[in-house]
Image (tube, rainbow, N blue to C red; front, top):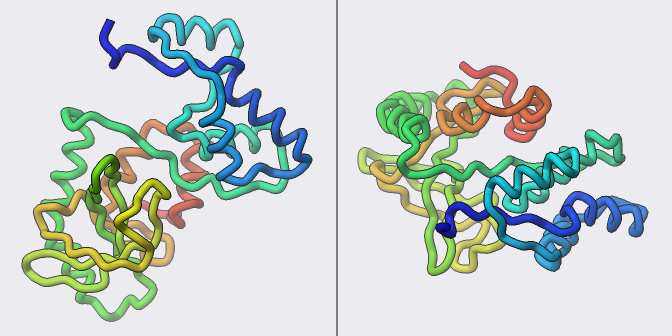
Length: 225
């Protein structure tokens, strides 16, 4: 059996551990506490069939450890726990061979001229222009949205405004040069109307209605143009 066929099974379930910890604390867990509980929990790697059988036996699907904070907030909302906390965005892990994901990148590349035209339009000061790029350093990499602060025919300059804690060589407010060929996506949020954002549309497509609502609230979008 290849390592790719194995899935992490938490014993006891990760969601049960988090419910117990929050009950004991008598106030909402913060993100660091949630991740510490996940990292300290007992977990075994099992086949997909055994993983599915355990979920069926439990009567529920456990929290995805890669989206631990997001899934925990979705569960808290389902349980009616207050106060409601910002779940952030759900991370989507896809293969480079995924045709739909690759199509979203191609669409972004093909419409960079539209993005530049909108950047040059000074009549909409409320716009929030972003470019997505793969940031890499030894041992870690992730796709990150950057605030587009400058551009020319060769590419863009983006400022980091949010960053996963695993990065050590990048920091908030750092400016990064992004050659045009490295742009994975672009978006402009014009007072709730989204232009571009092809990877967001791809990620959102398979979400439940509740997840779509939380996703839209997090990115501040009400209309997908």
